[in-house]
Amino acid sequence: MAVRIGVGFGGWPFATLQPELLWDYAQRCETLGIDSLWLSDRIVSEKFNIEPLIAIATMASYTKNLKFGTSVLALPLRNPTILAKQIASIDFLSNGRLLPAIGLGSENDREYESCGTHRSVRSGQTDEAIKIMRLLWSQDNVNFQGKYFSLRDVSIQPKPVQKDLPPIWIGGRSDAALKRTARIGDGWLVSQASALDVKRGINKIKEYTKQYRRSGEIDDDHYGAILNFCFADSFNEAELLASPYLVRSRQDSDYRRFSILGRPENARILIDSFIKAGATKFIARPCCPPEMMLEQLEILGQSILPYYH
Image 1 (tube, helix red, strand yellow):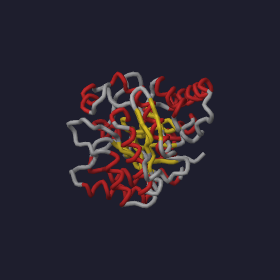
Image 2 (image 1 turned 60 degrees about the vertical axis):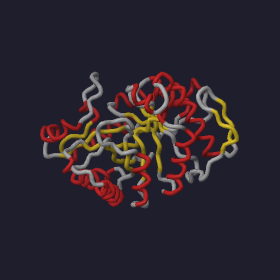
Image 3 (image 1 turned 90 degrees about the vertical axis):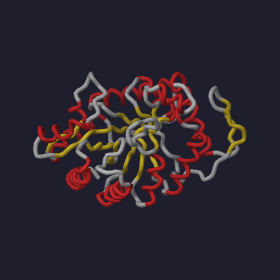
Image 4 (image 1 turned 90 degrees about the horizontal axis):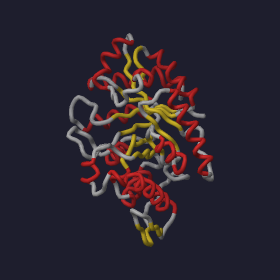
C-alpha cells in the first residue's frame, strides 16, 4: 500500500492577506513532492477563511501534479447538483487531481439556516447528496426522488476525468460517520485521533461494511489521518511554538498522540504507528507561527517525505 503525505490547514495561515502566498505555497508543495494540499471549509465565519473549491481551482492552474482535497467539505450546506458540477469542472480542468472529503459541518445552527437548511436534517441530506453526485458524474438524464432532493431528466457536463469518479471520503470520528463510511464512502479521513483510535475505527468500518452487505469493500489504502506538526530542536520548543495553533476539540485524548513535535527524525515513530494501525494517507497540519509556514514545509518535504514517497 502506498503511503502518501499531504499538507492541509484551516483559515488563512500566512502572515499577510496576500493571495500570492497561497499560490507560492502550492507551487513549493509540488516542487518538494508533497502528495496533496487540503483546505478546510467554513462558510460562516468572522475569521478570514477562503472558500476551498474556489481556492483549489485557482491553485490547480499554478501546478501540474499536486492533488487537492477538502478536509472536510460541509456537504449539507450545498446543493448537490451545483456541487457535482463544481467538482466535475475542477476535476476536468485539473486533469483528475481533486479529492473531495465530506462531512456534516459544524454544530452552529446559524450556519445551516444561512444556507437554507437545518442541522436536524443534515444526515439525511448528506446521504442523498452523495447518491445524486455519483449519479450525475456517471450518467445522463438522471431521475431521482428523495426526501430532500428531486431531479428530473438532469445531465451535467463535463464529467469528471477520474476513471472511477472522484472518491468521496467521509470525515469524522463518530459512530454515525463510521457507519456512513461503511455504507457509501470510498474512504475515511479522521482528525484528532490517535493511532489506537484509527485502528478501532477501521475495524468498525470493516464490521459495518459486512453488515450492510455493500458490493465492494473500501480499499485498504483509503484510510487517512490528519496529524499536527511543528519541527524544532526539542519537543518543548516545538510544543511552545505550536500551542497557540493547536486545535483542542477533544477533552478525552492528549493531542500529543496525533501531533509530530520536535526533531524531524522523531516524526517517523508517530507516522509508523499510524501505518501499523492501518492508515496510509496523511494530511500534515502545520501548527506554527505564520512566518514559519514555508520553513516548516521545507523540513517536512526534505526530512520526512523521502522515507515514505
